[in-house]
Amino acid sequence: MTPDAAAWEALRLSLWVATFATAFAIPLALWVAWVLARREFAGKALLNAAVHLPLVLPPIVTGYLLLVVFSPTAPVGRALEAAIGLTLAFRWTGAVLAAVVMGFPLMVRAMRLAIEAVDPRIEEAAATLGAPRVAVFTRVTLPLIAPGILAGAVLGFAKAMGEFGATITFVANIPGQTQTLPLAIWTALQIPGGEKQAAIMAGLSCVVALGAILLSEWLARRVAARISGP
Image 1 (tube, rainbow, N blue to C red):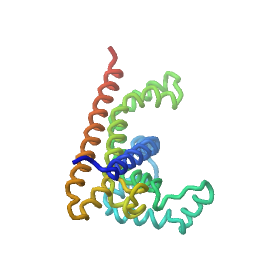
Image 2: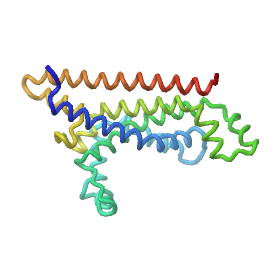
Image 3: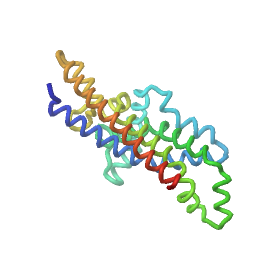
Image 4: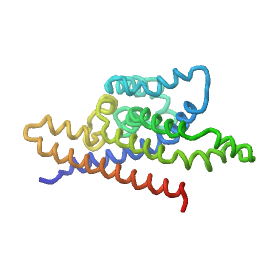
């Protein structure tokens, strides 16, 4: 038995959503991770708690909160639609937002650990040699934390591929529009005799996840080899 058209469409949409979510979240997660790792300020504990809140909240609650804030009848959702024509609720764009929110804590955590592992004295030495702050980050810090960024990106991508609760609450389960692979698997399991199709889609999900991990490992080795030099 081979995947049907609905399964391939769900896989395509999942890859699309996960790719967009990961690309969008990386810069923001890196900035938040750097702030948490390198800065001391009032409210740091509150920011850290807010970043990690999606990990402890039930995903359905997160999806409901997204719906309350970004629905077309809510002030924020209405403002986005009026300003740039962006609708999030019950659209694939909302699935991207849900994936970003749910994967963001994992990305920040991986990147923060990588930044904290870098000795600040290395950065200070580069600064004393006259390098601007941006140059210190891009030429010294960034190469050293690249494996952590890759690890965070893989975690965010994997979370986006497997996200279910927040997605189905915020954007529903519309075939061809918001039905990602986890939602398609759940739908197949609700149909008598759909277990085989669900198993096939679960296999597709495993293949994608394994591919992402292998790609991450390969990229990490390439980055490590470049940092260590010949």
